[in-house]
Image 1 (cartoon, rainbow, N blue to C red):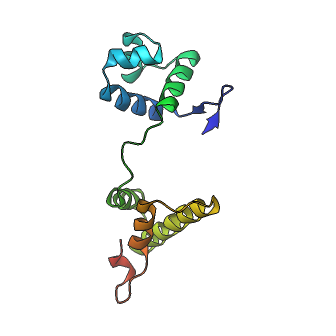
Image 2 (cartoon, rainbow, N blue to C red):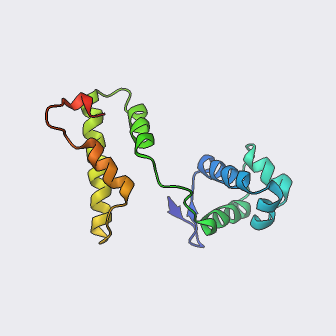
Image 3 (cartoon, one colour):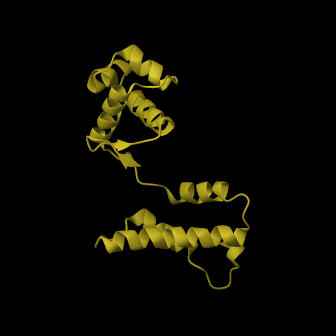
Length: 140
C-alpha cells in the first residue's frame, strides 16, 4: 500500500470495492453514500464494478479509513485454511514451515514494537509449533 497526498492509504480497487461493499451492507446504501458524500447511484455503481474517479476514490478510502473498525479478530482455523489454499503447490512440510515462519514473523513484529502479540497470533504460533511424537505433516 502506498500513501496518497492526503495520507490516505491507497488500496487496489478490487480490495477497496470489497471493503466498501461490506461496510455498505452493514449500513444502508443511502446512509453509506451520505457518509462518503457521494450519490447512492454512484456508490452502487462502484460496488457493481465501475471505476471511480480519483476524487471519489479518495473519498471512499478516507471514509473506510475513518471507520477503522475491526469486526472480530482473525480466527486461527481460517488462517490455517487460507495458508493451505495458498500453498496448494507446496508439500505439506513446506506449508507447515511457511506457517511457522509467518507465525514467528508476526510475533517478532509485535515484540519489536514492545507489544505483546494478540491472542490469535499466539494461537497461530502454538498451532505450528512442532509437537513431540508427531510428524510435520500432522501439524497442518
